[in-house]
Length: 154
Image (cartoon, rainbow, N blue to C red; front, side, top):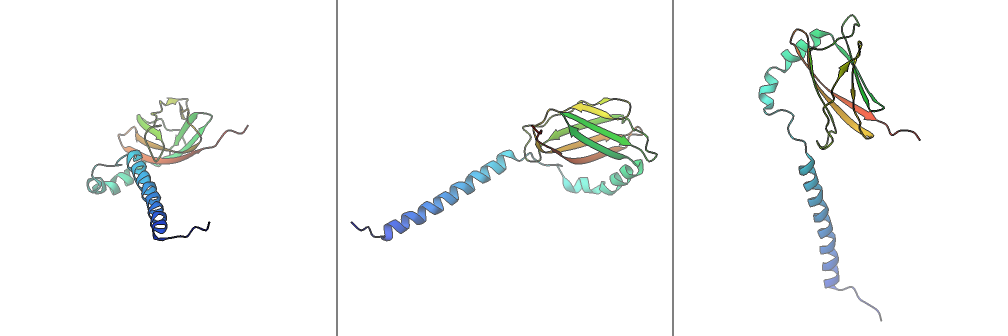
């Protein structure tokens, strides 16, 4: 018995395809909204008013940062213009994924004489370190440092 393709079949195929597209789009939209970590700043206009002055103050410190994340240890070495290690007055750091806050950790840094080190047990992948450091003279120093953790070789 030979079957024919009639208008109802075409309508069902057409409706099924659009139903799948709509379902996928709604799922992706829900995931995007539910995993968004939020705003970086509450009022970007207010933050922009002091941006140039803040940047100039940070540049005047002459600091260079070297950051590594290996074997579950986060190392942050700060050096000044004369290449001497810098031990900041205060440090506030968050290590997390760029896409969600579920895996964010607050590393507790310890000074080893030349660098700051903290335990950071993280999974392989892309991570971001958000730093807020206060210099000895009270100058705020902020950085966002992207990091990649490679999968351990077996």
